[in-house]
Length: 206
Image 1 (cartoon, one colour):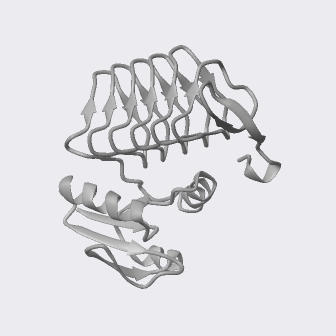
Image 2 (cartoon, rainbow, N blue to C red):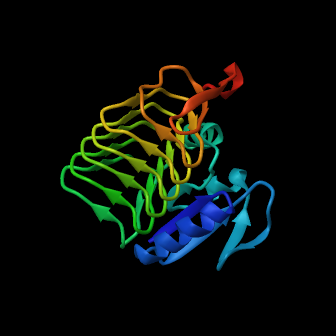
Image 3 (cartoon, rainbow, N blue to C red):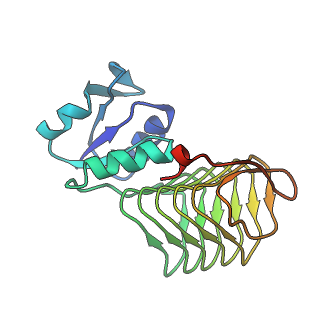
């Protein structure tokens, strides 16, 4: 199988390595700024060159707004969904097109992950959580049971969202923060318990 990865980044390398373990035997990178190779794989062109290649597409861009814009731009393509072989996927889990679940991550029973979202290394999403589109659950972060995340929300490394809470769209939860009450205002939240540091600007809201 052939996989086309848009974004020759560190995240792209990890996505490619995961794809290799998922039996993709041809992996090609595309990037508008970089040339040469990304890890063990060639960068063969820019985003404008994608139209000349067949294969499934994976958008390896960490920024949620840019990732969503690129997914809209290439909405006619088939997007790959990647699951590392060491991830634990429970029953009744739904994983949106274009999402990735990385090494050691756990998705427990009934979790729902939206389109083009990232569940990073050793993160956990517990039972009946609902994660929106273009979200990122960073390394070692944890969503306890029945948590809801809005679109374009980032849960930082080692952060925790306590069970039965909702976090609205367009939020960034800082590394190590603990969300202990619902969040309804888009912005950046830090600390234990997490408090609003800065409201999201209109340009950040997708």
